[in-house]
Image 1 (cartoon, rainbow, N blue to C red):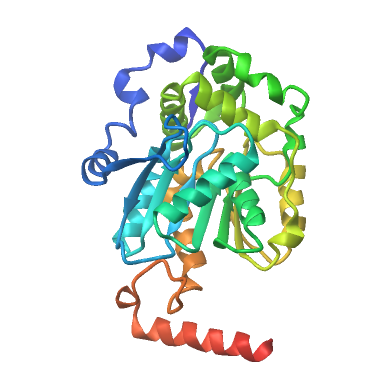
Image 2: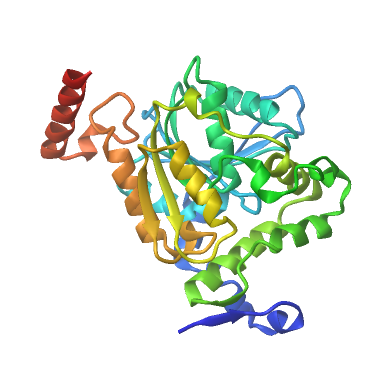
Length: 326
């Protein structure tokens, strides 16, 4: 069964129940009622507030942290938070304050990690979130704060959007124009019901962002910058992407593969721009496979008592073998 996404008044005719399929789901309501939203200020500017959900065992010092796309909030990864904490992982899903340049963002996130008393972390980034994760890993490469990366529908060079010349003018555009720019990258035409639900949920999340949040994210997304791979070449990387329509071009995906030739590749036949919402079971499995390589080490995002003795033995033998090979 396929659903066609219509623009304009026809879309507004959809019933409220259809438009809010994810928002009214038991899983989402369980997440909102059991995981508290925290607000943390780490900059001198009190207006810069990090919003985050921190779930799972707090004794874990190397959790997995989720970075949302331009249109996303900390809630968009609720299915990853529920599944991964159910398996015993510590998970943090966050929402950025308004930062206008990459250095400012990296400095702010480093201060947040200091505040949370986290030395190194695993980062999952979707689209812009993936780019920011790469830039933070690059920024801190001399004193590493990132142990591994999972990059979902992400990119390594902002020039792919052909907006570098206009990036510095987003700050003066009204919110409705910024939202129109973002919505232009959402899938149009026939999509399956789960993808339609994911798009509706992301539209709802987009509506919750104010002008400053949207303008600053679009500025970070489009101002001239690229990842310097030689600074982060030793990181364990998994690339998750989709074979169907998404905002990323084929060339942008190929560039990511070239940048990380040793990365694990996790391909989804379908999933559009938001596979973590509409293909959450597959995405959660790929995340678990990625994190499993760190079980039994100080960089595990899970307590060792949640891992079987057999698996710990396998991981330890892998560690011994990799040490022997060096």
